[in-house]
Length: 230
Length: 363
Image (cartoon, rainbow over all chains, first blue to last red; front, side, top):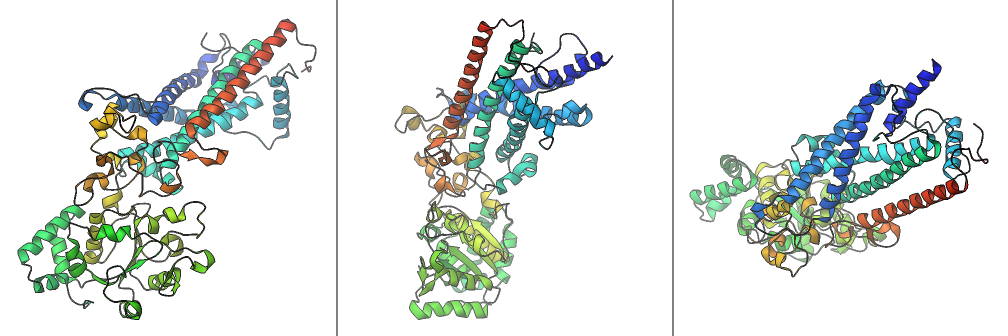
């Protein structure tokens, strides 16, 4: 009975990081997995289009009326941004309504002694000094830390600044500007937000690198998880 | 100069201008402000002319230069008829003690009833010694005149944001006016300089209605600063089509493609250049083939090259932009990941994976 409950929870946590237990009861957490992959797709689109928007495309020939390339790139960026934002809201809802593990990427218990002990162990494990993973359930503490500081924080920042910049184009009377335009009182020149929004892209790229590597590494080394791509 | 009880209408009738011409002027100005012509006509017929004190601090006088080129309304009308410009040492006839006496007189006679227009800003370091005006630090003149003013108009980026004299490291500690005076109605008209018609249009509005127009979050008049250069740029279709100038002298530049990749700051700059244009609607920087510098935005002088889209980030010691820093950081992470993978592979080659490594801590 206890074993089953553990398996159940492990499936829940694993699904969150893009991992899953073969078979099992993962279907309950289809919501989180759906979020994960919608999120991943949105981030892929956002990163590629975002980079192009920041640097510009190679020149296209012909009449301006014949092409809308940059327009389509920006459209893809904005659409993916909406998908990401809606998904993020859904994920916040799930953090509140789901089990304790659903809250992991939003709340890091820095004040708990066991957190630091487990974190220390996990660092030893990634430094090849220890072999066995400390926690059986949920994200390990190192992953939780990375999730919170590199993913959750960055995505929040990107959503807020993204909508604020979108609001500039949509006009000062648009709801995006009314809801998110307050950020421009922090830095009046929106040029700064373009710069920070761009830096955010690179934080996400770094996160994705570490995230994908850690999933594969953990799968190979501990055989506890495997990519849910299957 | 003028009698405060005299109306604008009275003055221009005395000068021989017909009522028909007067109404024409009202329609022009109303159109540029987005208002009804009748309200302007009514106000100009009934309201007394507002005295304006125009101070010059640490500046280059480009705002005045711009202002005197106003075409709608003609600067002649604005200066000689609409407002009672009691003090502006660039264009006033009086000099020396007579000129300075006007300040005291206006301050006493029109308590809370005059508009204080400020061009340039006060440097605060060394007790304001970097800008001496009439034998005293400019900052003293500014604060004393601001106390009794009805409203303050900050002309240009100097008065609004600080501009180049406030650029890092800002040795004179030049500050925008609203950092110094916080208790008066305040309007920012940024730009280096602001467009002539924006300036004269605002003067018309303030003197006509005796109040400030609707302002945005940053204290700028919404009627002129609610849209970016980019939003009304005539090269916008090239931006949407993905047609960019790559080099200043390439074919694309000759074809008039978008200057985005050459660092045009149009997408982040709120101003009316692309709508009103300059010199009576002749042109504006982008139309002349050069990207927008973003001169009406805060800190434009400290954002690195005018010819890069991405701001230079100086905190890393060497000048880099977000992309270069991001790629370098991602490269480091990539190398770390690769190294980690290599170590893992090496360890697994030495120890078969099926048995736990002997060094492992028992769980």
